[in-house]
Length: 426
Image (cartoon, rainbow, N blue to C red):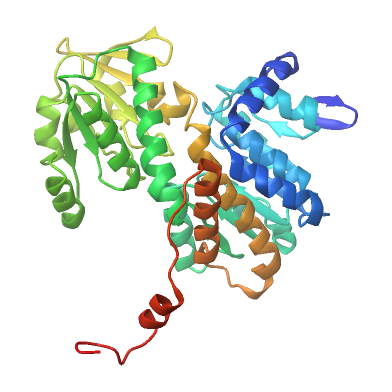
């Protein structure tokens, strides 16, 4: 740990701060909704005296969210939500220019990762912000003495929302959490367009292979996987979708994708990528039939979608052949390649989502935190959706910033939609 002006932090290199500040500014150019919120937050100070603990991907976009929270009066401590998702120059910029306690190093060990989560909880948070729910889990299991200070929290990932709902169903969640991930302005845009573009970016950076003409297997057809499938097809790949939900599988068919069981897709796939939030989407029996040279990637939050332990048992040698690309040589001579150590490939091997789409997601985070401060004490220990008026206001602000206008209902149209008695002949 280092101490500067009584500030504690644990980052890779404080000397990277200036580079990080430039990258923050570049990202901010496409985050006009956050800028609008910053103007209001500076005036109203909605977070004055509020302590926030955040476990998030430490990127230039996240840094701009931190900037507006601080502008609103918050005291924020930030840890990484994934060992490979930190941008070290951004962590340095937040420490140097915002005097913010940051605990995040790209490539940190699991022990460091857990230590960093514990460090941000030392702030004794009133609000939590999570990517994946590890912070909330640690708060409940290892730092439960702090629960009395917490008003509420926010969660930004599909995986985290799944875990939180399971926790709430078991009666274990002790404070309300807003499912930012399920906001329309999150899953329609961030999950689909952000994940789609950034995942393809990560795979290409890790491998530098041509997607055109390849069989690209997408595990799942939720919002993130829809984006991956869409962008892979746009690059000329032959996209195959695997699903367990017949409705989603049918939707994929109607979208023009080939749909088949994973075991069948495994025999013909060249590139495999999943984003389901579940474990072992690519399992040992799938790897046994994959072609020589197949690439496996994951865009779900945790590194469990590829069964790496099974792959290791099948392998005689593991070689790092490129940055963020490992070659597994199997007993029969086939070689399978894993991008980004099986972690979030868009952050492990690339820079994550473009800032323009994170503008809406992080506006949701900020407004959800503000809502929790106002309403959290009246809510139960459950998972709540983002209020529709917040969602629509973010969409309106984004359109305004883009110079796009849309229609509004006339008084007559509004009255008609709220009148049950008008039908045929009226």
